[in-house]
Length: 256
Image (cartoon, rainbow, N blue to C red):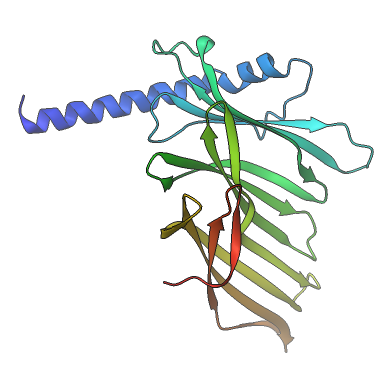
């Protein structure tokens, strides 16, 4: 077989496996896991997640948000069941098997700040030669026009046999907030961040580097116009080290 046909054949196989993987989620893998594990509890279908674990053939990340009864009006609390599921060799999702799991009780709260989305972070978090983590991003959105607010936080999970360890919890990556009179006068802040794996390591796992850019602006009326003044953007890097259980922010800036 010539080189070009071999490449095309490999690409066809990869595309086919990707289609098959998405088909497992499209045919209700998350719903079947919910029916199997929590037949008597409601599932928040809008924010439930099912995605192939990129780079790990045959495995899926399934997230089941389960609302809890609340005595506080306007407040909803959630348990989160996070699963790594192995598809059967024949592709039969009815025979899919849970290989790692973390049932996280009362982990999310929704009030005036709404949980708009739960999203899988498919970045390759290689924490050790034989350890790879995946991420879940929680996106939140405020409801106030006068005090706009949104943020995005990241948690990292590592399969450890039948258990799923949360090694990073609720790291805020992005933030947008402000306060204004809904006409012109006000101030706003934006923080954009990214997380990457460092070359150094602690406690058997690679260190992580959080890089953030922060900007501020102020608006005020000038005659018939609303004028916005942008502040100089600032940058910050922080190192996170593994303490044997979780990643913690260390003191001082990370070395570039």
